Image (cartoon, rainbow, N blue to C red):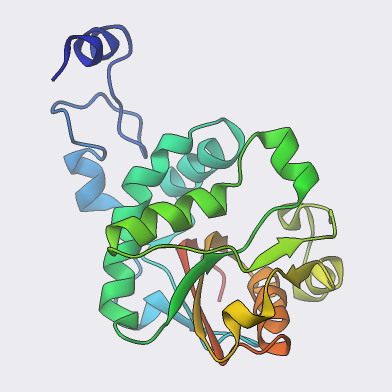
Length: 219
């Protein structure tokens, strides 16, 4: 550990990305209690079929400490959390999607949302997850409609209408005939992933598989 890192740890002791308890050890990102007690999606519960995308896999449920942690990641500039999240997500991808995709991408936020927030959390998560998988992530979509946040809306139909026509493909030649692994932070009704996948398929992609860190408790 360098002198600068030592001083930073003394002034700002590292905390678990989920429960915020203080950590011991330079490379530890998640405390032992959370490793044991996080709301994991076990076996078939980690896999959800979708509309336009074949499946979405998620290692965790969007509940408790996971929900609060993702809120900090998205809205409180906790972008370093991607280092911990990517380990969970990459392990889930290895388990369920080995040799089933050709390229990795993400579901982007709008230019307005990115400017306000300062970053695109899905892009950060996709880049970090690709690195864990010894791969790279490429931009395939841009969000051209600054729709209302899906979290502020009600059911599936309302969310589907809100996100309709929101995405356009950045480079059709890049995705032609490809099986694309599309990454986002959380899936609830699946409306956002469906619209993103639909845009990719209409532009020539062969198949879209999705992966998120967490999934809603709702069936």
